[in-house]
Length: 132
Image (cartoon, rainbow, N blue to C red; front, top):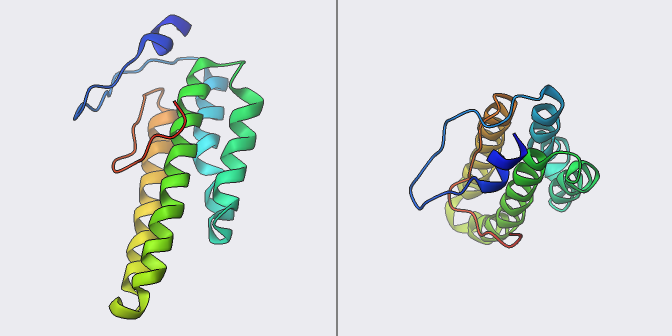
């Protein structure tokens, strides 16, 4: 399984839906990389720190967790930028931009968590990939 995950690549516009991981612990920790951001997401930086901790502890044990952890951290870093824009636009949109950013974050984190728990790879849309 390790070779499959390490060689997995994403082409632009491609959304792989094949199962690449069958080990239940790897799937659980990959899911936790995504879900750990939710309880702390109201603190902005907390949404980055929690996935970073999970990823840094488990990335060497499971390559699948390494892939999902990088994706979760990249998404949360990107959401930090989106949150800044949403807060700046809140006066013009009567707060709707903050609501849209909240729904966007929560929905995509849940989708990524479900995919990780299913053993699939997932790429968040509209994400700046700072960690490769």
